[in-house]
Length: 205
Image (tube, rainbow, N blue to C red; front, side, top):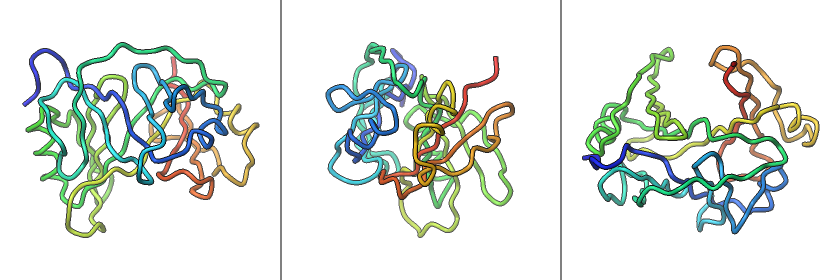
């Protein structure tokens, strides 16, 4: 169950990437971490990909349907400016072969999904966790087993900075996002990060 003192909040994601890879994307890295509007990307974890998420506002658990979890007290945001104009984490994606099971376990931890969308043959569930959004994706092609982290999306003030600075061999085309009035560009896996990463323009004023 969720703690009465705090709402569930995403505090950090622990990634297995090197700081140099994220600095090459225009992020400021201090002490091995990137600050994004109250949420941190902590780099240099032991395994490739998203290793764990760090949450506040729920009772202590080690995992949620196989997703490794650390629970900590709430923390104050540490402002950080990034050359690429990064604003915040838009969302982190978790995939599951059993949508109802994972959604139920999230709810038991005080994080019921607030919206579920039929995306045409599979479901997507959404829950705001403080500065970022959890997107749970039903992946029927996954083998039976636990849920797992998939990737993340970061908001940039201006996607053109990234497009102009990064070798185009590393970026897919900028295209309209599912969210009206926004654009998104995906970083190709050949760039060398351990999980899919995309960049999105801010919400329209």
